[in-house]
Image (cartoon, rainbow, N blue to C red; front, side):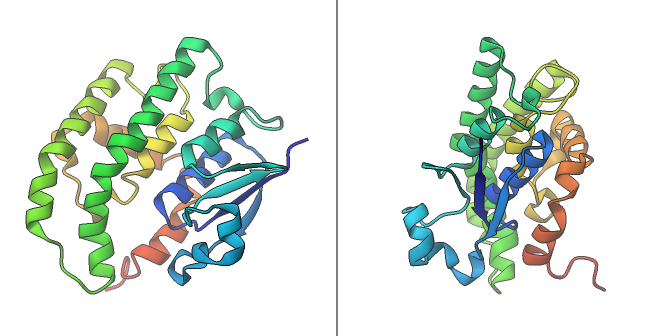
Length: 222
């Protein structure tokens, strides 16, 4: 029997990914809050779980996982949840894995630059560096065009079919504050349509408040 324990801070990109993905699949878990801004991820207790001192992490008995996509891939095969969000068909799963690896190695990296420059720096009282954003723009547009093309092919979600999967959650997480990140979505209509569909999911909506409270403290204020 599974005893999935997740250790994370809901405001971080990859922590939000795990929470939204688990909720999408209806996988039961025990939540442990690791306060990122208080550096609790560097505590002795948490370092024993994840020597990298990063969130999220998860345990299930004697198994420890430290990568957000790996946590979701494992959770999808646990009993008690809806694993249709991570297809079992060999070719469909290979396609899902391809996009999950692409998210971690390409998409997250380029979106993170916009997150740091346009969200984190202002939060810390610093100004964005236009030269960094200008240098990153071609990389972001290249990756966004690849995703946009895929979404035009599938018409709805990243994987073929009528229902969202953990691939959609993972890829959306990298751009989860796209307005504040100032991502140029107007040039990529398929991507713009798709992120709106992700944002309408109840699993996604349930993770929004913690993110805005921590990273967008001025949102909604005059």
